[in-house]
Image (cartoon, rainbow, N blue to C red; front, top):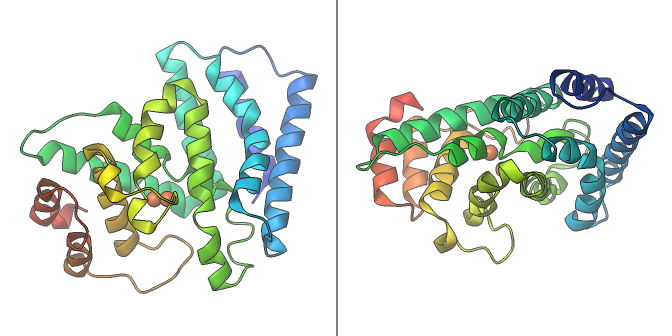
Length: 253
Ligand SMILES: [Fe+2]
Ligand SMILES: [Fe+2]
């Protein structure tokens, strides 16, 4: 991962958004951000040895300049710029994740538009575009740790994504959708699939389907055919209307 990229992105954001010009305090915050990210990655490289919630605390501090900046935005156009910037940041850090999020966003749109009662959901679109934001620190260590360790670390991305989405006022509606969408994967612990709203089920189904159909730059297990993937999605108790749309539009995913 190129930390300079993040620094440049942050500077670009500051220039593009109506926020006072970059100053010394910001520079210090950026440096803290970079150092903390390095320490999170450092922990991971040494086999982590710490529970995800401790990493989450470090990441929380690391993300604070972005969160503060976002929470000062009022104009919807600036908020949109910020969201685009975050997507670019994910792309700079881990391209397969950025591509995955873009495909999942498209898949969610296909599903919502073809349900018996079609709907548009800005919150779901946002949730899909940002749900794996927390994978931003992965490239550094995903290839270093053992496969079993990587499996153990995967849920950490969810908590980082959630922390970020919940902390920014205009992303909070997306956070609620993101929160439960990994219920079938067993996290957050105690979260049951029955808690998922329709929007969360759509995100979950689109996410699961995408993971089986496209490579994600890690976990290089064999990809499945569309029909095999559909059969897997059907094993979960999603709303039957979601399954129907997926099977009727299978080639579009
Ligand atoms: Fe995820
Ligand atoms: Fe995902």
